Length: 215
Image 1 (tube, one colour):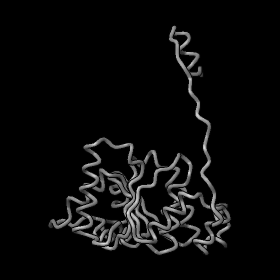
Image 2 (cartoon, rainbow, N blue to C red):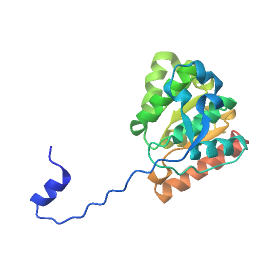
Image 3 (tube, helix red, strand yellow):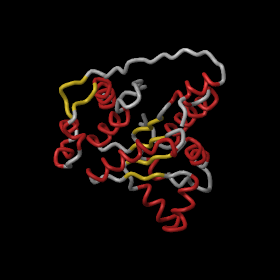
């Protein structure tokens, strides 16, 4: 396959290339197994890894009961920052990614960590709901979600569930949402202003109608 620059030259375009040098975040003298002792016997590579400073700062903020926005580069372990808190404090987390298809890497890491720690992670969106409902029934699926430590979804499905709060047809996630501790919104810069307004409304409704202590 041809490189983009080669194609542009063939088309007669002039262009400039700017390459930024990668910047590695500062490491701290705290390992993941220190925050999550069960990691020590998991055999996972992450157990002995030191945290980046933004990861530790995010972890400490969550421990202190704060809301936060974590802004850090790609591959700097934003997922591991909130997972460390969830695993060490038994927090129930709803993680919403813009599209589940683009979050395979994060979800696969979460599955690996949860399996090693005896935690349960469930993935739910409209297509998955239909498939799982056929195999285990709505009641079985509801129990599966209610017993999960982490549920991964997308904003479209979450909005559909939130609309059912207080209705005659309770949302599938009702039990899980009633004990929810932390809502994670990944890739905030992906959303348009309108979508962000809807997400903020979802946060407010969840806190008012489902989980008063939600962060």
